[in-house]
Length: 200
Image (tube, rainbow, N blue to C red; front, top):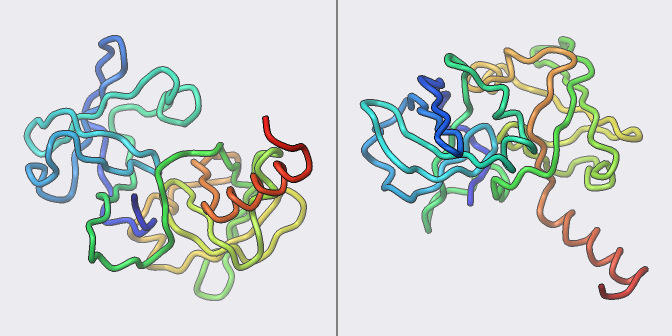
């Protein structure tokens, strides 16, 4: 479990195909600290540490994950938002993020707005009902507050600090980001669907 507060930006050092695809990601923290089997959110995707190589951590990614995320487009040098998993007693600075990507949100527009930058995204049609004004979403693992919603589109304001310490500064119109809805929204939607259609 994570909070959506990015603790550093890593870089893909190497990629190997060995049945599944193995990514070696250089990390900005002590690579010996996460134990083998520990979880790390990599641009919002919960991955398991399977090895270490110098200052890089190794992660195996299945074909299913590659098909549902942007990881299949990662190349050597791709920058990755990183967050280590929560420990009991850690500060919960963002919102509860699970690293289970619901889909891909497309960046439609970015523009200056005061000292911040306004980003407008379009959610996948099946997930648009999970986005609410002043609610939370995670985009590429970053916990963000939704400002407004219009149909499938929703806006967020990104402060300069967030641009500086994540990969959002690199994103432009047409880019796709990993989208994870707030867990509360998922359960409310499930309850409503169950009440309307019954079990099964």
